[in-house]
Image (cartoon, rainbow, N blue to C red; front, side, top):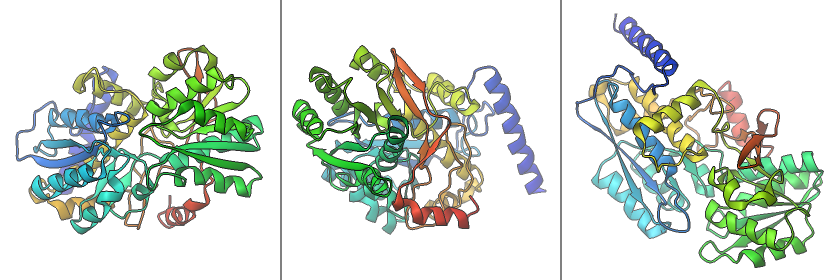
Length: 416
């Protein structure tokens, strides 16, 4: 009888969600319009907000979704409390932030995190304390090579690999330069996917690492151009990438070399900031479907941000990631007995996530019990067009990075 009632409740929630979407209202969780008032469920997120760039969009979107969930019945009556802590792009501060959340706040899981430094610093703590992290955005290698850390995004290595594949296909590029911040465990690794793919496909890829604290844009662009590449891959945060494009334009490189980028360039501010010189000459890999896509879930993300986010919260790919992370966590939690939710049971529920679907994703998402995670490894290509973007690839491109071979085998075993 309980199973039947639960199925009816879930079906009713889905019907309500469909009705809400038809009216342009966000649909979240139980979607019953009743504010949750039970015992809070503590979750956390670590972000790099202050530093070379504001990298907090993911957690802000997670927070907006959880606010929507709390206004619609919560987790079977229990509200979610998401505590977001800034690591300031500082490993020592990142360690303190995680300790505060895991040991003091005693969060049951981490959801929506996005940081350039915290994965490597805190992966061991998360494993020791059995805390699962459904991160919105993973960046350095450790984010994708930890048992308890699960990024929803594809990551800079996959993103650079896919856009390199596109440059080779679209522009017949045989020589490329990949520019990357010289951050531990990001450095060459994030460009080595393109490099390894290139070795197997007759494409030469050189790597230039820049100091994220004081990057010399003009010197870097001249150094890259001196290698006489057919394409330059910018695998950089937006705050570093935009000055690189300005320097490239000043040096007359905008029309001589094809410029492509990983996902951080896909931001509504970028086309207006970089100017007309890059119209039709700057291609970007998207780790998710375009923010302007008309899928029901993408529209729900926008509606959620409008209703429960701040006007200043970004509406970009990283915000999509945070929304998805919160949805994944919410759906897993809703399947649990609200009276028996603790850290161990939440970790088990999250590991059991399999076949999570959204029109924001190219493929179904999974977590599993593997030693590492990189379920999102594809995406479309968009190009700067006027003051916006246009999709230029036919559907999603799958990264042919040799480093993903173990995960491809795992996906076969899971029937994905």
